[in-house]
Amino acid sequence: MNLLEVKNLKVHFPVKHGLFSRVNAYVKAVDDVSFAIEPGETLGLVGESGCGKTTLGRAIVKLLEPTSGSIFFEGKDIAKMSGAELRSIRRGLQMIFQDPVGSLDPRMTVEEIVGEALDIHKLAADATARRKRIRELLKSVGLNEAHAERYPHEFSGGQRQRIGIARALAV
Image 1 (tube, one colour):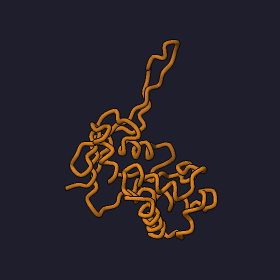
Image 2: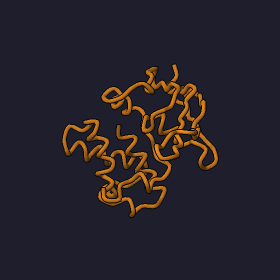
Image 3: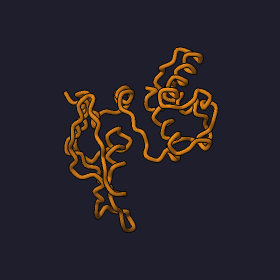
Image 4: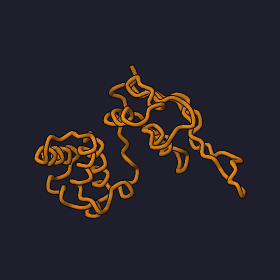
């Protein structure tokens, strides 16, 4: 059984013109993409800037609504899900954004950033368990426990990427 299967996925954006903003064309950001990933496999997606890699990722995790196609995660079609059903699936399907600077809130500490995922999914019994889990996650991505009190601008680009990975692993 495939862990993730994408079938004929399309994401088209309307181009509007005129006084009444009528749609007269579409930008085909993702057009008929299909692939499957089995448990334990890794997929690398390579392409030039602007070819639709990020749009594809956002559509897979439903940050963008696909125009058409199917997205199966652990056998369930998430393209048709919304609300609570989608939130439960997102615990197993996280996106690590390409630009760590743009994906980390500069006003939040690393502890707040990583802990936010724990809070949303109610994964820590109390503040002590939350703090312990955050320290474990930081350690697992090669960061020091003391980094939890720092802000994103205090890290290198690679360290910021690790913060994003810790946030994704939190759930």
